[in-house]
Image (cartoon, rainbow, N blue to C red):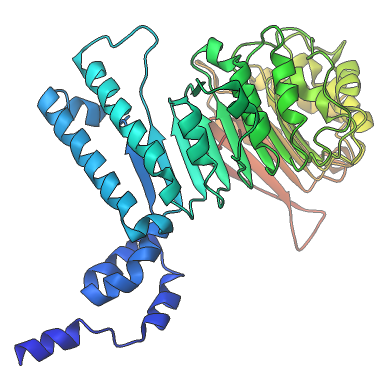
Length: 464
């Protein structure tokens, strides 16, 4: 009787096909519960569990874990266990179901400084070799993240076998020690995005091999996130990459150094036919002119040049952004001088006549007197909100010692809303601190002539 009961318990009451159909719509926690229900259910469902799992291999980066393993015996036991589990997974039939895989390596430029770094170096040497050897077994991998590793020929060949790869991340100082031939001619082709952020060591950032490899991998991507710095001929390496991105729609650029203390922009050199589908630019003012001649509709500039003021901001906007082949409908400017606001709004109307969404982050400690000045300028017409705008965000950092009285913010907002004729066609207005209180106003959906507002305390997410 007991045997029959066990047999009944371990037999799914539904067919495997139905369980597989259900599993396609379950999250990871539900799938784990599914797998623990019975052996037969586990056999049916476990492939779906691996599809939702993020496999992490390599150096443990969490400080708490490193502290816990601060002895050779503990670290070696942990490292050996990780290697054994990864080899078992790679040799199993489940490897082909894994969709996301990350590897974090370890390297120093002056040699290990202590025993723990020595153990990490030894573990990385072993684990990295095992990853390269087994990577081709993950035949349905869609996302690969490689942090702090040196890319050699073996790694490039292994990545080139991943025919379903959509997203490739090369971050935290990826070095290139491959041959020039393979850097230029390889089969690594992520289908959607590539992230390249070698920000720890300038020699590696400027590597010709790195630029060659990334340029060769960009043929199919629609999103490129890249980290650069200002150095002789760095723009040429960047342009080499962009010249090989025919499908690119979104470009995110981070600058490692303050390259925007003046109004200088990157030298010319980008082919006029490059990135013909670019729609979104997030990046520094230094490279912002590349939007010209391209169908860009969304621009986020950070940071603005420090030298921008009311005497040159209009000319800078026109010179930098005029010439896009599509109507820009969203613009974000980070760290605008308070004194340039009125001129900035006027220039926005002429530079972006179809702009609907505008976010301005002020580089100032905005106080009550400054808000009073803004209200007065609006009232007198010195500050004119562009009539094309539907949403306007006007925010600033919370500096040490900044006023924290939200009542003042609400009062000033009330003064602004009392002048509906000065608000153009706005439907949403946000005023407040980046970290702290926001006053968010929206036109009533029932009565478009009326405004409603609320105060929020939140920390907005930063877009990179």
